[in-house]
Length: 426
Image (cartoon, rainbow, N blue to C red; front, side, top):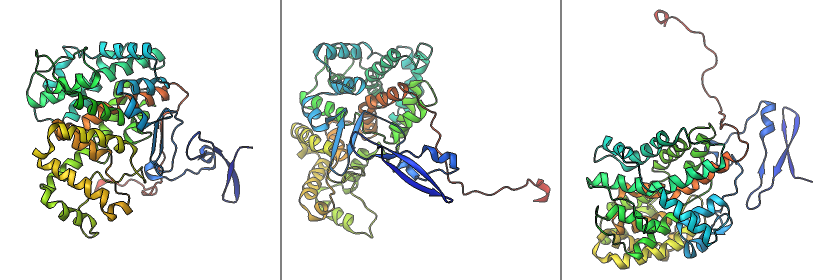
């Protein structure tokens, strides 16, 4: 017999079914409460399951993150971003022929329409790249709106391939526009990460020269950010998608949500913190400030809201981070020396150990991107690039089954009914 819980409202007992999860916590189905004139109250939706999903599973207490059942550490060490994109979209890892076809499809969609590129001319050189990316993705609807049927599975796959292919190009174009440099065309002979790096740091008309170490680290950053369950931006994509809007508009809504410093700006906050500390000689001073409850200073990039034990993504990102630092010569950069000193303290100091304030993915990805030469304002764009397959997978999952338009309720605390009075009588 299925589990149920009982709830009594005004003397009436109501049975609520408990829905079983394949992993993690079961959930109480409260949908019948609306017939009793009662809603649940859950600010921030911290205790609410708003959908069914078979994409990603997180157990924050145990430090577990799985894409389609595959542990993130196995994928990060043995797979690559494009293979993970295929896994998220298709539920299974590809065989060689499937992977080759998928990679070829992505490469065939990398180029941005020449006329569409003019959208970047509408931005000043100092415009934030996230504003350019959000606008450009929304603008893609103008190219594909009439030919995109969201009820057609093949159209949804084509949309996913287009966006996974074009987001590195758009990101690199935003980077080049900010520097006032000419765009570099996509190169189909390069891997996904190599192509992105070449479009960012290469020169138009010149052959590519991308470090394998840097390319591997960048690919791992993309892979580790590919999905993270029902976070703010993913939930935004799902909520927007529930209106049957154009998919490019739904993804653009996700970009806007990710732009928030409380969500996608965490690795940027790490670099801002390092700049505030400034020099390796001041690390202990700021560590003591962080320990002082009366001091508002916080060390960014340590601990995690979801992961209460350790961040499984950080464990594998640490390896790539150290490899990049070794190749780039971290001793020549005072901020990277600050980061290395902070990491050492966090792993040895009882204050950090007892409170599980371990370096998280944002700490290592921020340092890595700094070492690669990515400007701080582009960090969230890199996050957008990595998260694209996750957003598209959740949007497609929503579209693939019966769904309702999202309509959260509220606990009203406003005025009761009042009668209007003429302005001369107020």
